[in-house]
Image (cartoon, rainbow, N blue to C red; front, side, top):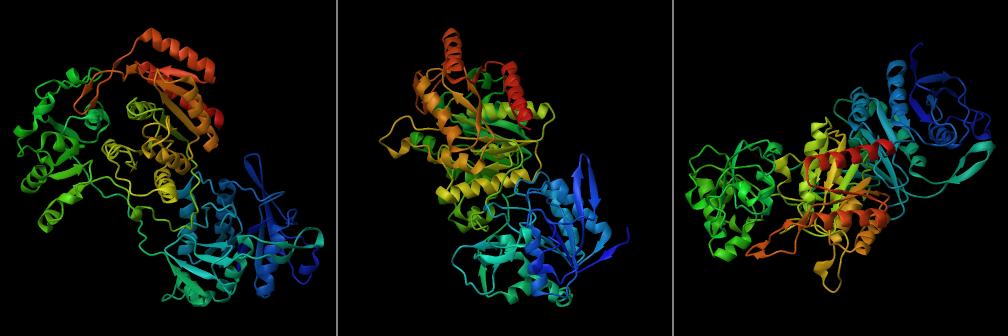
Amino acid sequence: MEKITTDIVLIDSGVEMGHPALKNYKVDGISIAKCGNKYILDSDINDTYGHGTAIYYMLKKDNPDINIYVIKLFQEDLTVELEDIIFILNFIKQNINCKIIHMSLGVSFCEDIYLFENICDEFYQNKVFIISAFDNLGTLSYPAAFKTVIGVDMVSKGISNKGYQYVINSPVNIRFLAHKQLLPFLDKKFENLIGSSFFAPHISNLVCKNYKEIVNEDYDIHQFLKNKATTIINIENYSEESKKSFPIKKAVVFPFNKEIHSIVANTDLCSFDILGIFDTKYLGNVNKKISEVLPYCSNDNIIQNIEKLDWSLPFDTFILGHILEINNLIRKDYISSIIEKCIKFNKKLYAFDDISAYLTDNVIKTNLNYYHPEVKMGDVKNNTFGKMRCINKPVVAIMGTSPKQGKYTLQLQLRRQLKKEGYRVGQFGTEPTGYLFGFEVVYPFGYNSSVKVTGNDSIYAINRMLGEIERTNPDIIIVGSQSQTVHYNTGNLAFYSIQNTELLLGTEPDGVILVVNYNDPIEYIKRTINYIQSLQETTVIALVVYPISKDTKWTVLGSLTNKCNYKELVAFQEKVIKETDKKCFIVDSQIDIEAITEEIINFFSEDS
């Protein structure tokens, strides 16, 4: 095929050849349709939907002398798969010389963002500009959202009806005020049409008319579009920086509390060595083996006295767990002492609690290498006008009916098993230890929460962070939650699980594993299942119960848990299965984790 030269390549539904509005134009192009595993090229570009006819007319009306080459992709509707778009872009790269690729299309669920974006980047580097309209459903769609693509959107109010608004620091580059336009459509008729795709041709024409000026070495397309805009909006304080890089090679941990328990019980999931586990002598754990305190753990290292820590040992990081309650109980300021020692011995500090109140001294700020997982308003980064990412990777959430029932343990066990079976696991954690296990994202809204955002900001931030995980190309994403999903009682704000609702809305899990207690009322379990499945289009895949009882004695810093009666547990399991019509797993060994993992894999295999 001889290489074609044109001004604009229009990828759309074709053009109605006999439409009176186009009688003065000679339409040239090709149809590409998928047949099985192959693509068939055909000369019939007649429009059977109407959209392409309207777009072609708009391009020609404003700029009659431009050359347009039509590629008919759509048939009866405007649905398209990523592989179809990739094929056509590669076809253009090999067979057509052009200035602009006009795409009134895109995908919201993108299974290979990197591949798609790299192809668009290559066109941009070769001074071929892709103009793409955003999805009218309000989501973040591709290629419009890519940096090297001009993304065009419309809004119902708030901007002038003359010209367009240019947006700085946003994937939404251009915004028009929405209004209907009378345009040619099917069967030689005209229709009043509205949608972002019917504004994008104005930008393609503008760029085409001024192409020589734009490709000048001292100029770029964004500066040109900014100069031509009626109004300009700058989304300030937007940064694409991700979490601070905080590599750890060797560490010590203190104190020996619930969050630290998860570390010492899962050292194989940590990418660093633990040189010592420390606690205060007042809690009764010092000089005991870890396995004595945590019977489920095979770690036989000795818990040492923090007062006897040799700070000259070759560890690079001090991991400081939740300490404020211990400070208050013992009336000793461990935090100040540890900060002082970290500076003196050049150790990094990873703290679960917000210790910023201790960092007011400039000397401390300057000399302490410190990290604390937190989410602030600056981390929301809403630069898309509320457009959210549609995650195209399988997402499974671990939810629960109460605190302290094994949700985090299950997340780590599933991570280990899935990785063992060869899956690439992405993970969204809600415990400050998440980064220590290699999670991509931590949103710590559990005990002593350091999440400073709520409501829509929280939903948006969670969704954006999940998008960051998706970009690492995992096979599956595990999402963790906190406490109960649905309130058990009313009458106090502390009873309401608003943040778990925000988590569900922001992550939109495809499936949920619900962790329950053996003494939970069946009606409460059913209410939780119904809430999860009604809030989102998701499925509770299975229920999980650990053989532990919380109705036990209390210590100075919380409750202890013991194993419950196994016969009662089995009876509860059978009742739950009958009442909920869901599988219920009792987790008492590695075999049970393997069974739950298989259930999750089968769920997503059937779904695909």
